[in-house]
Image (cartoon, rainbow, N blue to C red; front, top):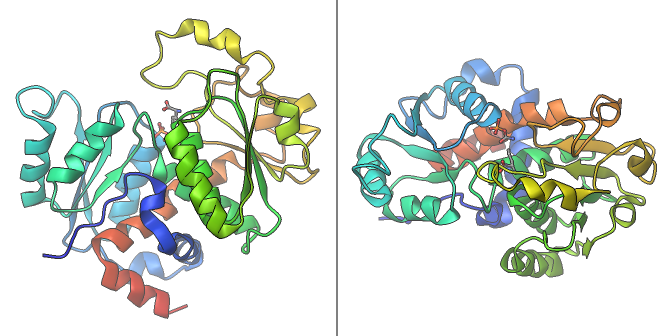
Length: 317
Ligand code: CP
Ligand code: NVA
């Protein structure tokens, strides 16, 4: 039996990452493909959510439909998993019906446990540690503006969280410089930074950690932020005051290139991590980024669940 490929963190896509993004950009631009190309025909993808979602849920459901497949959204509370059945047993059982599984969970070990027992591809739809589908859409959005990615420098301002982890890995994979400014005590995982550093050594990307948002934003082509309190951290109300000075506002973005792009994975807490003036400005590309969740995931699903179709489509452009 060939080994099943999962997507638990963005570096699982290895050398094929750039091609997966190029495929997504091509597919988005191709007016005929919605009608002619159905690589998920007869395939069923189960989408499990233990946390709320707007973008991930809708983009997976619509994207799977466009590719000719069937999406089954399985909400926590409606299925046995975590109550009367283990994650591992659920992975084994669902693999007998489904051709792929997406899973939004709390601890990252939950999605790795599911992947270990599943015999079909498992895609992490956000865990406390990683959000690979977001990073794929993010780099796709940057690549749409600049196909070679040359000269890009991404500045992250905010928490050292799941979204930053995959963003820095994705930048490191593609040779894009990335600086993250986080308050002391909110640094990203050392283990993820080590992985990103190894990838950056190969690609030539420059990775920098700072506690100074102005330093991060100076000359940046992209400024990216996310909520200061992530899902599952709602009880950590004291955390907010540690982010004083980390709001992305007009004063901070004035240090970036004049044509910088403002990015946010959304949902945004306007007035906290970003002001209306920035997120509603002409530099904001947050809604392109949201739309690209769907195109990037369509490419990933085709790559993982029907690799022959992925390569066949690639031959056409
Ligand atoms: N960015 C993102 O994952 O959004 P949702 O929580 O709405 O899925
Ligand atoms: N860091 C946020 C991202 C939401 C898409 C969270 O985990 O809640």
